[in-house]
Length: 128
Image 1 (cartoon, rainbow, N blue to C red):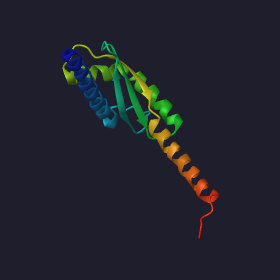
Image 2 (cartoon, one colour):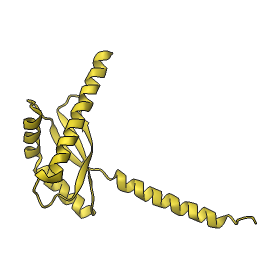
Image 3 (tube, rainbow, N blue to C red):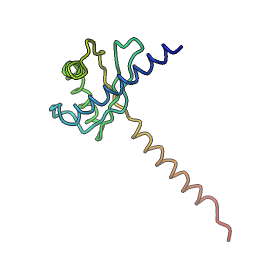
Image 4 (cartoon, rainbow, N blue to C red):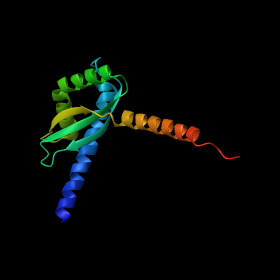
């Protein structure tokens, strides 16, 4: 049982390191003009460690999200080589990028809930 915990802990540490390093690259090292202001929200490593999915939150429109996703996909080889050099490891998992829209969805849900509460207040007459 402890062996499984250690393996899980190791994978989470590697995922955190990937998140920090890719985030640093997004902040200024990647000079592709298609990349909009964005940050890494999560890195999910496959159980075998052969692949990783990187979730990116883009601050902008859907068109900017798509162009950022295209740019990151085309820069995948460069990002992997940089991760290999910085971390000093032999193997870096195959990276795939995905847009994380959870922050926008949360904001939209909050807006809808607030509207519903306002309607409920108007519908129930206040007692003097």
